[in-house]
Length: 249
Image (cartoon, rainbow, N blue to C red; front, top):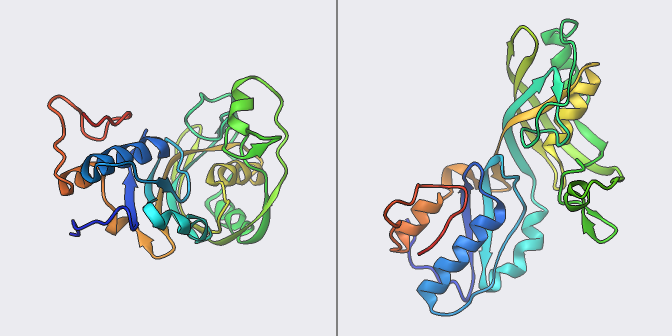
């Protein structure tokens, strides 16, 4: 595994973001490690946010490679995850508790498969109010957390594939495992919401993993601990591996 990094000239690092970490947690950890190794501040940025409750591929660029962030953001993405049909949450995932339940008795496996395919192609999608979308110069999630009304405009996205790989039925809900290949700007949480609406029910996301960004794959991604080990930075005694707030001591 590569360990002769040139962070000043620039590196493109592919990480597997742990559950509960924010994208900025990971960027900050890389900044601290790079500064410790280089002895000076180096520009560091990521090429596409992942929600705290999502895992998977997060690309981080350093030095002169940060100039490539915009082009990296244009790459298509692949996700796997699970949608809960039969209830909704305000943020369309598990960050907020269920706010309403819906019937699922009328929903057959065939109907789920059929409705999923209606999203394949070029579609209009409204982002979640709890998202990083910009509204009048502010992030939508900041306005939502302030209790303000947030009106988000639909955006055109491209869904290349929406495959349902498994369906598990329970008494009051249905769990649907999926794989999605999509364009930049796609909110999988919104797709979960919209699938629930298409089924005359409600739905939210319960698990999400970004497995690919263009040619960058989760199979070739580093965990934060692996990066520390490669860089010769020991994990401090008593620090839980892959905790929610990574700290370099």
